Length: 109
View 1: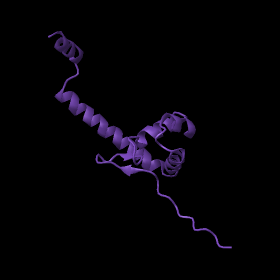
View 2 (view 1 turned 45 degrees about the vertical axis):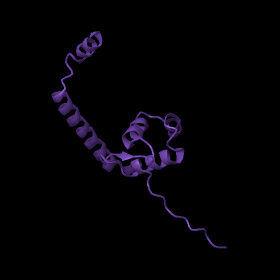
View 3 (view 1 turned 180 degrees about the vertical axis):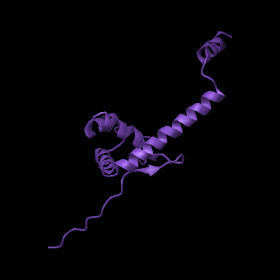
View 4 (view 1 turned 60 degrees about the vertical axis):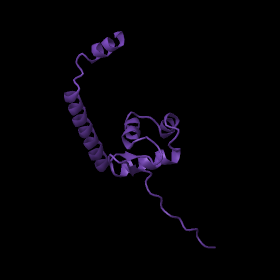
């Protein structure tokens, strides 16, 4: 009797054009899944919320997160920093003060 060859599977994450880690074939980022995990949601509940991500992939991603927590947390911190920088640049270019009033005024024309 010979043992079947068992091949390891890669973590189901890919980088998109912006450099974010995403579940392949979806618009679901690592950030979203880890945030749900940190809120205490179970893998099954997360799969129910994001049905496009298989339950096996949810478990694989959380396994990766738990084994590489420092690296993932550093990645998440960098994503947060980049998001804050982008928001600052956008708000400088398009100040949010009075935006609602401007939009409502356009409707009244």
